[in-house]
Length: 304
Picture 1 (cartoon, helix red, strand yellow):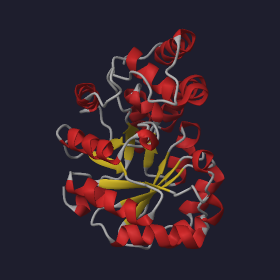
Picture 2 (cartoon, one colour):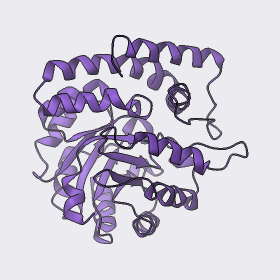
Picture 3 (cartoon, one colour):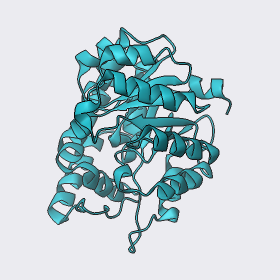
Picture 4 (cartoon, one colour):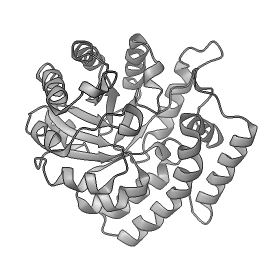
């Protein structure tokens, strides 16, 4: 896909896929590609490799790049391959971004640097994102997840960055609808805001968001895609109903158990989740039972 085609496809539901590991603790290439083949054709806008749900902080850079190579063999247009390339330094983020593009990344998801969080003000963050975007020829999306990073990038800074020709989107995962609306009021018209919290996805779409990167789409992609498609087809009541189906998954799986819960849900839904990489703890029997109950509840009365 060329650059303009990629930009046009920065919408819909993206699955922030898990990274399956084998018994040795290495990436399980077969399991990873099995998941991607199952996602194909469901209607996702694309997948996100090496995001938070993919345990990116615990992946070596060579592992992130290996995931890109594996994903590129399976993911086909119009679905996009978005890759998490954010590291702590601007120099290394740019280098990893360029390497990911060379291996087939369509777009880059760059999390806010956060180790020196007290120094990560608007001036520092703006300079960081501009430098990365200056050095690549693929769309860059800002990744804001302050509940993990402790770093908040303000709406004015995002608005300014949205005027850069290569900074074309934001994944906003705070769940703060008021902030999302503030951002939407400041960014350029070509800028794509993707929501990372199912609790606000419907209202954010109504406000002008382009889609979502939802952890629930890893194990219940049909529900997530159905919500988005109902919205764009002008069936808001159906979209709201599907959001209500997804809410228990957010509250009973993603919120209490995090990545471990998502991986367990993937296993139970026929995808490959597998163990977490330490220090994350893989979900035990009691937690898996709760996850199974939440999955069953969400599907009652549905045809898929």
